Length: 171
Image 1 (spheres, rainbow, N blue to C red):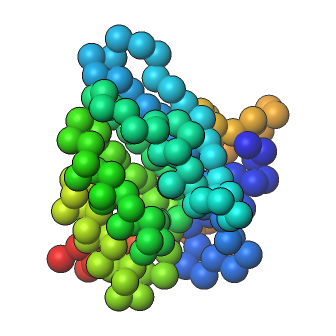
Image 2: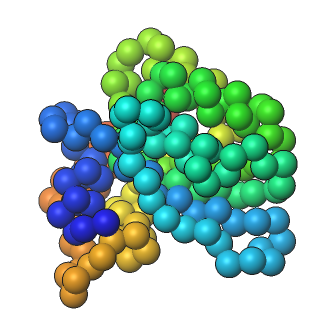
C-alpha cells in the first residue's frame, strides 16, 4: 500500500472521520514453520464483504490445517464481524488468531463490546497497536518509496487511550 494510504487509514486517532474502510495486513504461519509465512493485505469490499470476512473467503477458506494468523487492522471488527470471527475460531480448533488494532471501532456501542468479548472468549488475542507495531507494518506492508516512518505526534498517547478502553471492555 502507499505511504499516504497507510498513514491516513492506520492513524490511531479517536475520531476517525473519513476513515471508513478497514485495512487488514496479515501474516499466516503454518504449524512447525515449515513454509514461508504468507503475507499480504486486504481492505473492505463493501459490496461483498468486510476485510475480516474476505480474509477467510479468499486466503484461508475452510482449512482444517494448523495456522497462526496475525492481523494488523486499521480498526477493530464491527459487531457482525466479531461474531463471525468468534464462530470461525470455535469451529476451527487449530486456528490461532491475534489481532492488533490501530483504533477501536464504535467501542461505546453495547453490541461492539459484546462482540469483542465473544471474540476474546473464543480464543482470539486482541491487542492495540503500539508505535513499534506501526513501524513493523510500515516495513513489511508499505511501498516506502525511500520514505522512513516517523510515528505521528500523538501516537503513544492514543495507544495508551485505546489500551484503557480495551481493558475496560474486556473486564
